[in-house]
Length: 68
Image 1 (cartoon, rainbow, N blue to C red):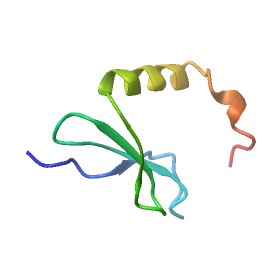
Image 2: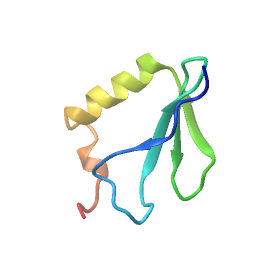
Image 3: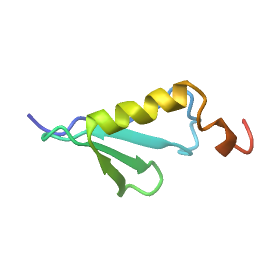
Image 4: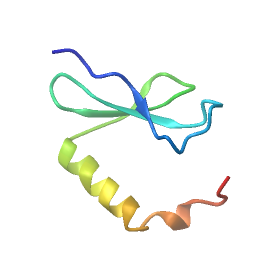
């Protein structure tokens, strides 16, 4: 098994202004900025799931200064 391909949200624009995510062969979740290419976060699936749950619940909405 090899690393999965990088995936970005369908809500991201086409101008590479997004964060991408993938799973590694050892089950680690990696995040990167699409225009940088280097991994910026490595975490477990459980921790990533907690982050997603918080985002879905609106816990981080205050961090967004504009909705383009």
